[in-house]
Length: 199
Ligand code: PCA
Image 1 (cartoon, rainbow, N blue to C red):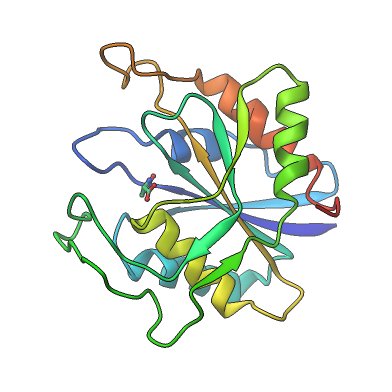
Image 2 (cartoon, rainbow, N blue to C red; image 1 turned 90 degrees about the horizontal axis):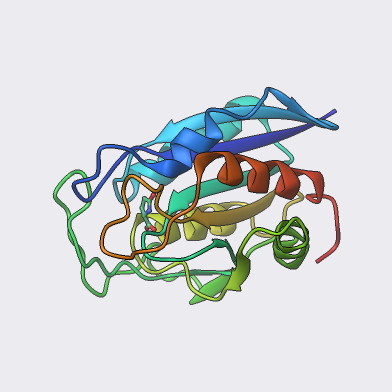
């Protein structure tokens, strides 16, 4: 049995739910050959990544997959890149709004995700749900966590990925796209099934 640490975020930006955690906490504790460990993390620069690393250092997962809300996107997106940049349009849940700051001083500009991002997109698309590869996780807290983990685990066997989910129907106003919670859960289960693929 392999271990997956999967995280979702608390609500932010005036929302009362975050679909990432709603979907993650509905996952079973075992999916195929994976023991699934779930963690909710704060929408706070720095602290979010620290929380994931604390838990990861306790349970030593084979893969860490973080899930976040990307309001406005029409489908689920597998993030290919973590960027060494903090650039916030809105304050995080601690009131911090950095502009042009690094995630890690003197870290490399970017890392590629080490989970099979294309296989994840393919399996969700084949199931008839909207999914695509994303070349930017933005520069808010989701990217902060992705970059922090990719930096920490660079050159090790621990693989790291990030998956964004759209708004839930009840969050989406004025024609903004959304996805049903059950479809998000389905997409996550499909992604877990392909975690051992190559690309
Ligand atoms: N989405 C934000 C942070 C937390 C979340 O769910 C982001 O995309 O950075």
